[in-house]
Image (tube, rainbow, N blue to C red):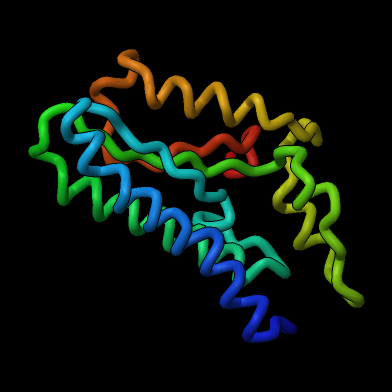
Length: 152
């Protein structure tokens, strides 16, 4: 693992602390409006992704935070908390991923969907829209994979 402490702390700050702050500042309003939170985690929390240890750790924290808050507020009427765990989504991060020197390509291929196709961010957005909608009124404390079958 070749992470600097600064890089590690930056990923945790953006991905985990940022999510915590949004949740903390939103919950009182969402309790009043019967809203919900859908946090963005990653499949890297469920299936080790090589060369992304800090990213996986930060997104694993997002899943843990989401589940803990969902349980903590389960008795609050109308407040739901879920997470999506995407993989194989075309984003600047995935498109600009630099494969480390000496990387094992077999490990990288385990995170490619069976059909080999990456999808756009709209795939995740539509899943978030569903989880935030009244159609998912009975979905709470869930981490939903949006991975094109990577885990199949």
